[in-house]
Every structure is written in C-alpha cells, then in structure tokens.
Amino acid sequence: MKIFCIARNYKAHAEELGSKVPKEPVVFMKPETALIRKKNVFFHPEFSRKIDYEVEIVLRICKLGKHIAEKYAHTYYDKIGIGIDFTARDIQSKCKVEGLPWEISKSFDGSAAVSNFIETYQFKNINKINFSLKQNGKTVQNANTSKMIFSFDHIISYISKFFTLKIGDLVFTGTPEGVGKININDKLEALIENKVLLNLKVK
Ligand code: MG
Image (tube, rainbow, N blue to C red; front, side, top):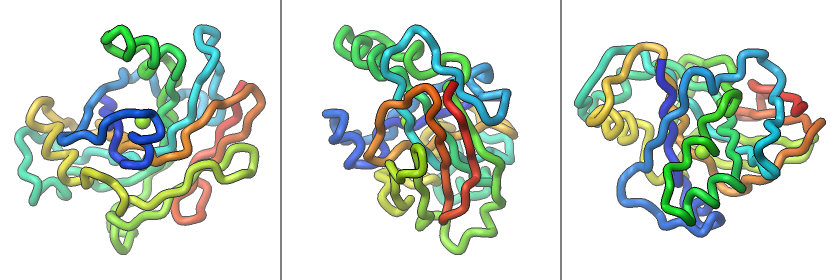
C-alpha cells in the first residue's frame, strides 16, 4: 500500500511558505509505517521542535491503474476521507535550503493520520467540499476543494504516469493555508462539511 501526497496544491498555502505555485503537481510519498495505528493519538517525535499540522482531503484508490486518462480518473477512487500530513517543518526547511530530499521531515512514523472514508457518491459535488481543522476547539484551517490548483482527476492521471496505482493506495491532495505548529496535549479535529471525522490527541 502506498501513500501519495501532493504539495502546494492551494495557492495561498504555497505563498505562506514562500514557495512557487507549481505548473505540475508536486508529488511525494509516505510509507505504510507513516499511518497512525493507534487511531486517536499522535506521538510528538523528539527529533523536531516544530511539527506542523496540514489538513488534507484524502482519496482512496479502488482500481488497479497506470497511464490513466484524466476523463476516466474519477473511476479510480471511490472514497473520500480527511487526513493530517504531519510535517517536521524545521527539518523540512533545512532540507530545502540544502537542496536535499525532505523525506525525513514528511514520511516519519505516525506522520499520516487518516479518518474513516465516505463514498464519493454521497457528495453532491466533490469539487466543492468544505473541510477544516480545529486545534483545541479553534478553527485554524478552513477551505473548499474548489480552491485546488490541480483537481482530483488531474492528480490521479498525473501520478499514474509514474506509478502504478493499486487498490487501497491513498492520495493526500494538498493542504490549504493556515498550517501551524502543534503542541503536546493539543486536541485536533478534522471536519468535512461540519462533521468531525478525525479526532486526535497530541502526546
Ligand atoms: Mg501536505
């Protein structure tokens, strides 16, 4: 099982990090061991002083595919969830400055929290989904999938040029603006359309 992630898919977020708005999706991956196993706890790793939350809509792949045309891409995912792409921002910034791969800042154990999934047909329009993140009860990220630079279908088609997609693979589709630092004892709640789907305590 693979976890794909898209970076800089919301303009305002790319800008808040001082990154260029990309011409093609920026893809990276997390290993299966990044998934949070103990469902409701994120253990703050000791190697970072600044772990950021990044709330993202997550797609679940339902069909084997390679070189998928954009017009058929919607048939390759059947479920949508919400996740948090935990990022050791201090380490990532250092990697970027030195021109090094940023894996250790993005793909460490426990860096991928994912909610339960909802069938895509239950949404009126998946390109207009409201989603948000609350930190200790306060909304810190709030966005709509209509603000994505690259649509779900474009992302799936693009990734499949390079990687074979398999059933159960996940795709984190990018975070909107408002990313920020987490602290021990934080309570994080990720919502789709005002419904809490993911609940995490930072320990
Ligand atoms: Mg992200």
